[in-house]
Image (cartoon, rainbow, N blue to C red; front, side, top):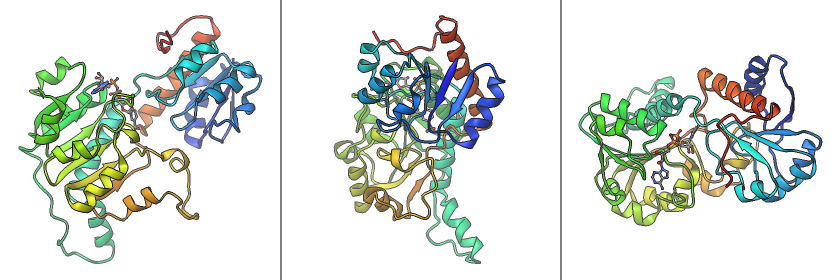
Length: 330
Ligand code: NAI
């Protein structure tokens, strides 16, 4: 089947060409999928999109008018798809529910460790011949309380790793996980988790219920000096509220792999341009903020699994079958 592939990076081409081995005709387009670029997919029965492609109603209407029937999301999250519009237009949508939860979980822990022990600052100092330790003080993670919001595939692995460090585990989820209970995690109301955790790590999907889960009211309940780590989706946190809490010192440190307005920023080299996002620019000024550009998923294993599963989904569509990874559009 002919597949129009949007938001292409070199690493996508490598992994998809290898997994495809000529089975489908994949045409790679560099631009993000937007109302302006959607006409590029005219005549393609299938379109492949990533997390910052906008699968809004106008985009889906353009795709459907151009003959597209199938949407292949090369991501687990699907908050960027207007599901009601997809249903109305008769589009079928498949995703990659799990590719490497270890990749994201390990990145979340990498951020915690680096932020706690100021690894980036330390490295920069040492390179300049500055071996002073002032400003690099961290805490023992052993014995600290880690609050995990969303204890699905990724959250469970984070819990297992943090248990290995000797942390006390608190969890919040609408569907508690037995694997986490077996690790000794105590499921508590969200307000209790906010109040008792020394480190909070977000692993819930972005839904209307979780949008701005971390807002000024939630931060007001947190321990002064708490560390917040978000590798879920940017809009799980209200960024201006978090900035206010960083300025006041209420929030001790912040690590982000995702950002609410990341679409026009992440996955591209903007190093020669003037940063236009003033909120993001403010975040970059804090010494206790560590940001990566949505790279939690970015391991060899995950890229291979994403390509293989996406192409299995495409093959199922081509055969008139369902892969079992289709979104239920109702
Ligand atoms: P999952 O579906 O296995 O787990 C999500 C968990 O969140 C489930 O246990 C679910 O019950 C829970 N949940 C749903 N609504 C909730 C609510 N209102 N409050 C609390 N918990 C709620 O998903 P998985 O694979 O663990 O991924 C989690 C999220 O991580 C994804 O939705 C995605 O947004 C993000 N992600 C980020 C990546 C990155 O590169 N930074 C890569 C992959 C996923």
